[in-house]
Image: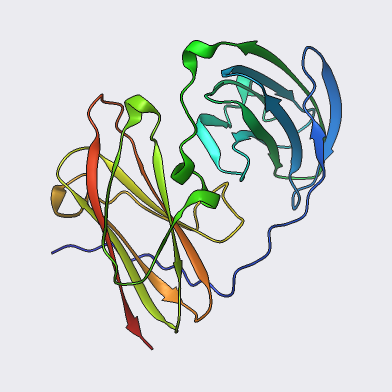
Length: 251
């Protein structure tokens, strides 16, 4: 059996980096600055489901990336832009569905210190909405003990795009987390606490040529909390059922 082993070595949970969040300018553009080691952050509160369009322009050679996130900092579906429009590394824009009322974030990442102009427009549209998916955010992740099996499903057609799980580790060792299913294409990601823009490790290995079978293994320390996200590339109308399991080999 072919297994995928990630090389992640996580230490104690790092605290989320502090940031200053500005209000996203709607219907106009305003200037801002960003550093290579500190993202620029903007906030937007939606009172109804709708479509948020964000445009970003930066001068010079600084490479900018644009993300729209939920309240926890997890990028929404299809909410990343690193297109370098017109060959300009600082030219980004996207339109994102905000599916429910609530607070959302806009993050700007940069390869170097630089400046930019950012502007946005908002189109309320209840027809694109669906209820919040509580376990689709890091803060709503199910608490799972190592060795405990969980059965669940994703239902893209009804807004269930991801399931989060939080494991609290009692003692150091090598932790393995796996998903198994028969239908759909699953992705398995591991995250450091508070850092949700990019996974620390990712599996889309399709073990045994089954697209729902994924595995991540790595070394963990006692007392640490590790978060996992099960998501999908599939866009079909049928739910994707899967089983998540885990085990640890003590040091």
